[in-house]
Length: 115
Length: 114
Image 1: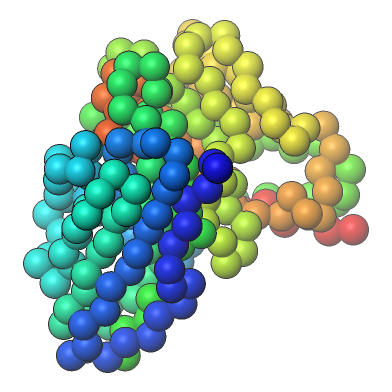
Image 2: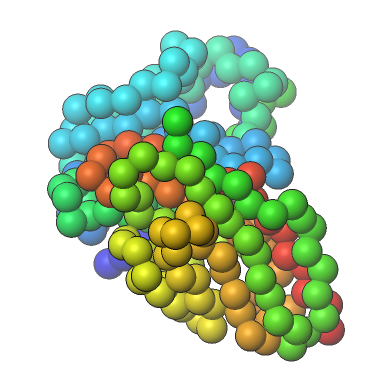
């Protein structure tokens, strides 16, 4: 299984809602990532988990809250978002170790619209 | 810091034309280099990779060679198809820093017409 899955595929939420994005991989990867991608731009890193511990937080606002319940799952909890948070949210995973070359496998993304 | 520069798009080609998308990089050390492709409405797919100088990555008719002397990783395909229409991202990573961000170029949009 060389796939990263993400749910939901699309999400529309109001600024007062609480929602969660989910990501799953079964490749045995021990690093998992959240990226945010705006239209016609490259992905921007938000968070990295390595061995289920948060290792990188790229100064992301607290209205985004990541969680890594186990080595296969990654969640992104959303609360009180702003319209400018509307974007494609991509999950990725990779091996950890010198032979991994940091090759990252991406999921299909969740298209988020904040009204 | 490390960076990737891609040629500006969009690139518009007729079917069966030859494709080159230029990518150059700036990095300390010896990065791994990648090309990702993003089809409309989808996530990123790894197209090919190279992890050391003179490596050639290839997949689905696409090729790119890691040129350390010119710090380049240009993407080529001999005969493009309409189905190749997508956005292509060149990216690099510090090969010894698994679990860190990929550094992406701005992306090049390819449009192929029949």
